[in-house]
Image (cartoon, rainbow, N blue to C red; front, side, top):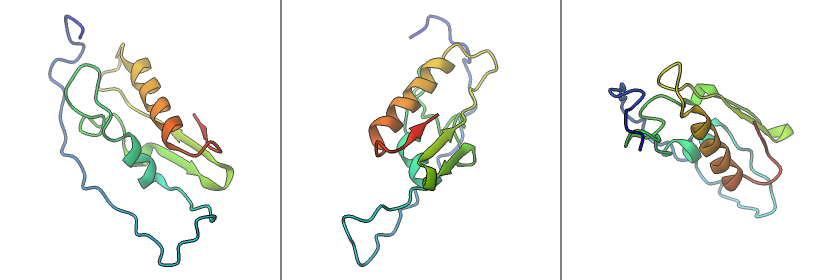
Length: 112
């Protein structure tokens, strides 16, 4: 940890309830299922902030509204907002989000 925190007293928000996607009744293992914002947020919501014991969702660094998904073109863009304007951990947070998505998503996706 850094000796002095950049944001010593961040505002902590309540976590939203997880929404579970319903499984289709006639499952065909070869059909490509569309992926939406909900699935992306479920992958990255529990990433911990580098300075605090809170998740990115609890600090509102990531929100479902800041995720753009184009499943037809296999493209996703996640825009995150650090808790302070001059956050030196923004690069680390961005890399954590990127690596988590690359590891979690099908290889057809371009993550930006």
